[in-house]
Image 1: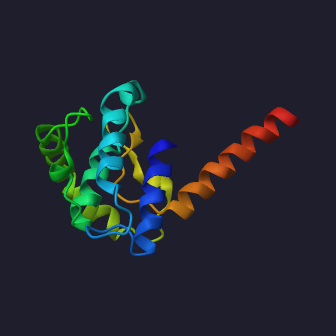
Image 2: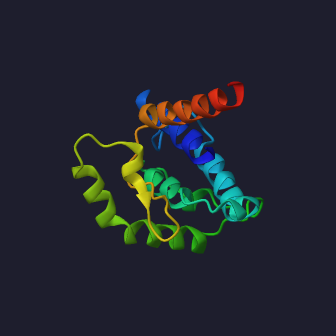
Length: 143
């Protein structure tokens, strides 16, 4: 859920031309580093797999996270290199996911622990499937 919310927020910024290097939103870099700090620290027990996706979409948008690294946030340039290596390893998965016609959120589940792979996502479909799942659980409790 956290990854979906974060990536959806970044996607909304991109839809309004605000997710770019010279954005009017002046703190995208430090916000991202703080989210990465959470993902690699307190959130580590949650098996977060979207941390390298944050770095990937920032790199694709021309947002320089390396320039924003500072001592107040425990994410280093070496951590960013490691995350870049992780998304590079997934390159084939991104291409295969992009070729799927009629893609649905279930198409992105798999891997070692049968987790979300973050190869491709559509926040409208993702949110719709989360809401549907929530409604089904709520119906079970009410009935």
